[in-house]
Length: 235
Image (tube, rainbow, N blue to C red; front, side):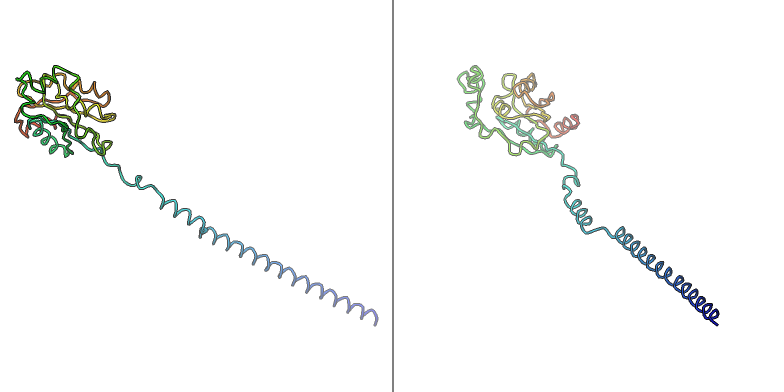
């Protein structure tokens, strides 16, 4: 009888241990699986949705791009500067400005020349005196500098020819300005004289800029003649 009781108790203990062994591992696997799924879900969410710091930083970087990187800079402008004693150079200057879509700047002596002053046949006239006395050729201008001078890439400079050279009121303008980086094109008007060395002498006086050979126009030059010359320059 005691043996049967002992055998019965042993079977009960075996069944108890077996039940415990089947239950505990199952709970453990469920817990680990749940943790891994949660961690995987968080990782995927983080990868799919950038943080607020990253999103804000990207937006700020794009919004702060300099505007000059988005648009091309404008090309330089053209200016026609001239001194006209009798109106002939002014006419040519206006034709050049129309052909090149240029701004115009007239050089005006503070002490204007009268018709008598310009009479080169009169040995006592102002212009003859200035020719014979180079120190008297430093002519003060109403304005010798141009507003927004830096914006001009090409500058035409016009003048009448006096004794084979540029009328000296132009000298004051050339000496007062820096032509660095500019293409300079001299032009003149005269009844018979050619351009001569007038352009070269102005370039030497300036000391800066890229000076082209230039052109001489007769009095009463036509607009077509000026247009043809402008096209030949290839500017």
